[in-house]
Image (cartoon, rainbow, N blue to C red; front, side):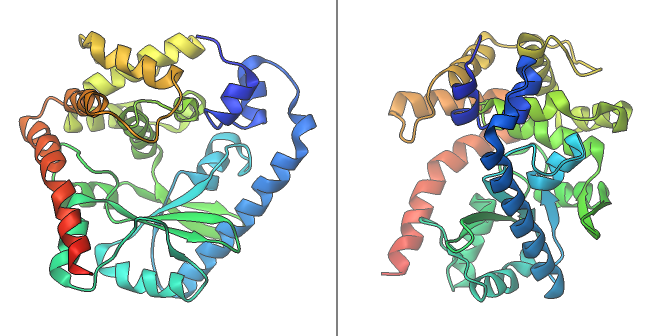
Amino acid sequence: MKFSREILHNRHRLSHQQIDMWLGENSSKEFLQEKMRQLVKVKNFINLGDLLHKNGIPFVNLKGPLLSYRIYNDATVRISNDIDILIDEEMIDSTIKILFENQFEFSHGTIWPQKKSHQKHILRYFHHLTFFNKELNMSLEVHWKLLNNLPVSDDKLKNMIKNNLIKMDFSGRKWTVLNPEFDLFFLMIHGANHKWERLKWLVDVSDYPTLDVNFLVFENLVKEFKAERILDQTNFFLEQFFNKKLPCSANTKLPKSFINFTIKSIENEMALKFSVKEYAYRYYYGIQMFPDISYKFGIISRALYRSWSVVRLKFSFE
């Protein structure tokens, strides 16, 4: 599979610096406007962090400029079209208030109901709220869960995250981030969860500074989450595109559909709408990610329940 610079940039959202590194070229100097836009985004990210810290809202940064800094020692190499932060559920109302007071608004389709019973539906069946600041042209996702549909309980995941946090120095400030082992594991799960539809997520894993990672700890995370298929799927695509692998593997037998559906996701244009058949394929892919029976049941029940749950919430506001 070969891709042009245009496709890698526009479809897969790789920066021209990343594309140069991949293709062994030196064309990024021709795209200085991209670098300038990224510098503005990093400045806005820092200001957002200052705003939240000033108002006593602790958060964990996910991906974004700090991931770029961690991988490339440069916060502008990796393109970030939105900012992702993780907060405690108890801080959601305070966070919404602060953001609304600072020109952020809910993105289209995002709701946060007033009734606590309705909020519980959102908290259970979703994992983030999305905000947008028109003045800054900035999208922000506020997470209370790392991801939906993981084969561990929400409480266990919270404890695991709490035990896998470190402080990172950047721009004269200290930021809370995932430690290298959990960060790399999260990037792998995140990419697989999205079927590696954007190659930027595979590049995140490929370029990650693995010398910082204790792979005994990483392998224990793989085992605890029963993510052996995802590890081997990641290695399959790392080898296909970059002729490399992570320094560990599970040697599982991957279903052909688990690979073939992902190849189609990478090669085809990203769709905004799906047919019933395509939805079925996507849910079948999700079911294959982890062997845990309760996880598979959660995928199915979430698919059946979530749609009418949200509709019921919508009706309650009319």
